[in-house]
Length: 112
Image 1: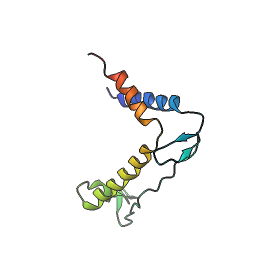
Image 2 (image 1 turned 90 degrees about the vertical axis):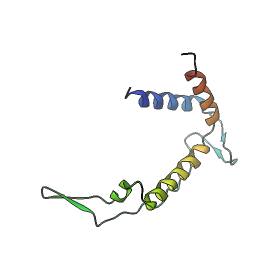
Image 3 (image 1 turned 135 degrees about the horizontal axis):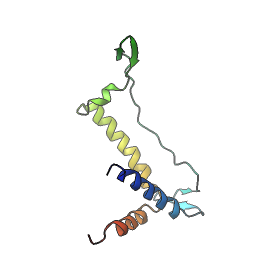
C-alpha cells in the first residue's frame, strides 16, 4: 500500500508528458508556453530563526525552520497559505489539466 503514491505519480507524470502538444501551449491567462519553458514562480519569504541550535553530544546543529513545526501558530498558517497560493496558481497554468483529470477518472472509476 505504501507504493500507491509512487504509482500515482508515475501515471500522472506519464499522462502529463503524453498530453503535451509539441506546438505552442496556451494557458488560461493567454500566455503561450513552449515545451521546456519555465513558468515563473515567486515563493513567499521563509523566515530563518538563527537562535535555535541543538547540541547533540557535542555536535551543534542549527534548526532555523523549527518555527514551522508549530502548525497551530498564525505565522505557520500564513506561510502555508502563501505556499498553497503559489502552488495552485502554478497548477492552474498547466495545459490539459482538466483532460488529465477526466482521463484519470475514466481509468479509476470502474465497477468494483
